[in-house]
Image (cartoon, rainbow, N blue to C red; front, top):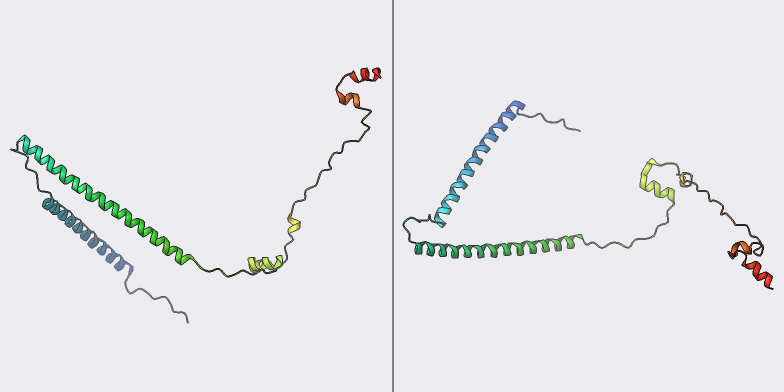
Length: 179
């Protein structure tokens, strides 16, 4: 028994109106949260960094204030560097541990495979399923290549052509005449 799809109890226009109201409320909440974060940031900065009173200070007082600010800046830079190093170390450790977990999950013992003798038709049937019913003749699809007959040089008597092959241009005649 197949159940008929249920009809929605809320009409499409009512659903659309509810969605638009939800989006409006969400945008208002988002803007309020953004404003709260901005106010919290400003109040935290006022607490941690008091405003500078530079008017009416002598040159020596200004130099002392600059030295003090430089020392605070150095301390903050050291803390920032230390935290960056700790974060990098923790990220590296997390990466190594996740890699170990992946390796542990990925290792499975593979069973010893057995050699199975199967014909080409049976293999095609197993791979392609019922699509191939007749046997496929692979040899019919192959291109035939005709071998060219190697040109054989005619074998002749070497003594007949000695003068041409020797490249001596008549020196053989002088040799023959000397005998």
